[in-house]
Image (tube, rainbow, N blue to C red):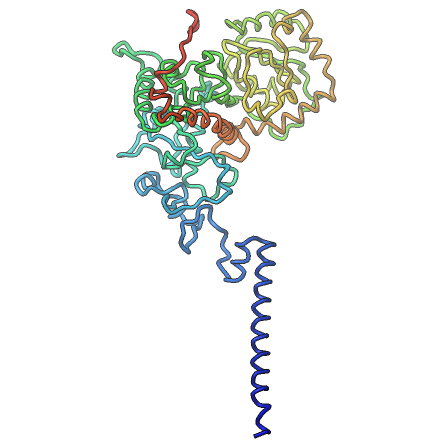
Length: 500
């Protein structure tokens, strides 16, 4: 019996060692897990332990184990009409199941009204098929008319960009996406091609009581102000395109709470349009961009260049005064010009051969000439006291433009002496800066990161906190704007008899 006594102790010893081994193993695995977690975040640790798929994660997570493959047409390129019916977002994910990651927080979410085609692409000659509202831009993109129409074509590029967001496989370089639930949206986008409507349909036929342009504006006001989205915010979160100075003449006084996208504020009373609520957008330049520009200070023989209408009213009176002051200077080109008789190509060659290009106020404070100068890398000389400039909250125009007060510019020898006093070194610094910033003023499709389309969306985004504050303050006592519609509480204003 005495010989059997050590056996239990041996068994206990082996069991103890086994337990210690298991405990040590568990501690080792746990310590490895926490090291990975601290180094690469919980997702890395989780993926490492469970050997999850090595596919890149999608922008939206729909809650099941399947990921969206951006290269799969059925997922990434859902037809527009199907999106509306199935309530899916621009990547084909059911809206009710999606979960947005942090990297989408900086993206502006825009809800776009499905206005009838006659408000937008039908103005370009596109005819809808069946119940469709929008062209399928994957197969056909209606072309915008050329000539002077192009300078105010902002409406076209922004609408195309929103439509294309539905088929994007990635949000890289994108500043806005279309959403289909207005309560999720940051802004409500109104896709009326107002500048084109003004340019093409202002004249009234003898049998018409109203021009087509005026009729569309009346219908637009009735449509927009009847929508629940307008009533919910008083219109403050609506984005309306009115880039041509004469566009939306009938509707602007009724839709004033909305955010306008404008060329300048020259023909608006301040309580209808102002820099606090509205966005100044660049013109689309008409001349060809200077690609691989090597024409430096010595390679540009003309000192100062201006070609355009000389005799203008209002703020443009300075043009004729400057014409008489500068017309006899041997290295200055100051002459009348227009788009006819190859005028755009002549202006392109002239600007690209000039060191400085004059941008003088005309009937309105701004003109396309500034953006033509930027595209040709000709240092802009801005003589327009009331001008508002695109993206000036983030761009310092004094780094690549010369500003001269009108009262000083029309003094004898003031302007020419100022320009002649700018040496090669200073000019070269500004010339190089022009080439850095020119991409911010380029309109193109598909849009690219940092171009004019994305810059406009970003400018709109920067206005969102301001109008949200006003909307929230208006709801303090249980109803929007004390129970009245936005249009009922517009402040009274006096408009000069000669305003229009």
